[in-house]
Amino acid sequence: MSDILTKLTYQSIQQGKNYFSLAHNTLTSQLRKLVHPTLLPVSQGIPQELILKLQNRLNQLLETDWQDAEIGIYPHSLLFDHPWEDFFRYYPLIWLDLPLIWERSTRNRLQEFSPEIDQEGYPSYYVQNFHHQTNGYLSDLSANLYDLQVEILFGGSADAMRRRILAPLKRGLAKFPSLPQKQIRILDIACGTGRTLKMIRAVLPQASLFGTDLSPAYLRKANELLSQNPVELPQLLQANAEELPYLDDYFHAVTSVFLFHELPASVRQTVIEQCFRVTKPGGTFIICDSIQLSDSPEMELIINNFPKTFHEPYYKNYTADDLVERLEKAGFEHIKTQIYFLSKYFIAHKPA
Ligand SMILES: C[S@@+](CC[C@H](N)C(=O)[O-])C[C@H]1O[C@@H](n2cnc3c(N)ncnc32)[C@H](O)[C@@H]1O
Image 1 (cartoon, rainbow, N blue to C red):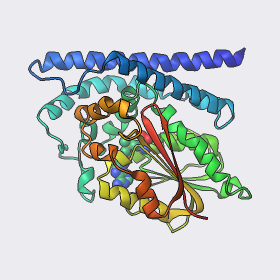
Image 2 (cartoon, rainbow, N blue to C red; image 1 turned 90 degrees about the horizontal axis):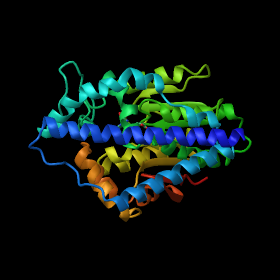
Image 3 (cartoon, protein in one colour; image 1 turned 135 degrees about the vertical axis):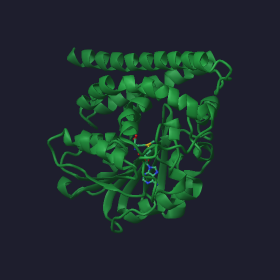
Image 4 (tube, protein in one colour; image 1 turned 180 degrees about the vertical axis):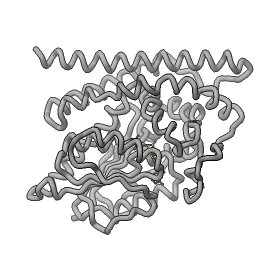
């Protein structure tokens, strides 16, 4: 009985987040029309039939999310780990930031940073207002708003999509059966605000976790989130995923969530090669990123709308990129792909 109640609660909260995101998006686009009445809509309207398909995909994702908790891949508590405090603190700031975002997007100002933001030392492809975010990835405000913005973008399902890496991660680690959990090393590249590391920690309380990202502000936010848990802290390091500062063959698993669509094509290859280098023979590399045109042709309109609404300079190229070929070129084998809602997963293995 309590199980049914827990499932109903999970479904209701997810549905609530979905309705909230819909309401937010409708309100903001109405307001945008009021503020900029002469502007044409940036994206094409979505027909009812496609909305139903999206809803079906979302329901399947949530069912898998529930089932994976039921079979013990992760504790049920992860399903209810919502950043409510951040929501109440920062949601109003999303509205306050909107006029700046609209201004930048209408004037096509895509690399605009406040004078106090230090842009030195970052690769030029990175110094962008991704998603039209104020100061791109380089400010504390951006780091504070990011998780809420992603939740709204995905109708409240961003964490459910991130959690889909946990089952293949556990399966991959089962290839080192005699290894005590304390000796397992896992790296999350481009860890952002640390949500994926928090999930991995819930599944592997004793493993050594590592996270890298280029953004000091996002790493500060990750540190804040991960310090709330009174267990061993993941080691966070500011590093370019193109030059991972780790020894060869060091990690039993490497993960990457929502990074590859933000990289130019040649950088994608370099990052995959770095991940191959630092993964142990027999280890697993898991990528979670956007669906692509080849596997989801029925989602073409959604895929095409995304970079029009949000500044995503490398997304179009990503949606047609053959990442399996790239992974094989780097040396990975037995590559499997999976699709959940709007995300695609590449599960690759370094030969033992
Ligand atoms: C869309 S966010 C994803 C963050 C996080 N993984 C998540 O699940 O939300 C992309 C992240 O990639 C980081 N990033 C982009 N290019 C990078 C690079 N070359 N090396 C390291 N981090 C990078 C950004 O700073 C940002 O935190």
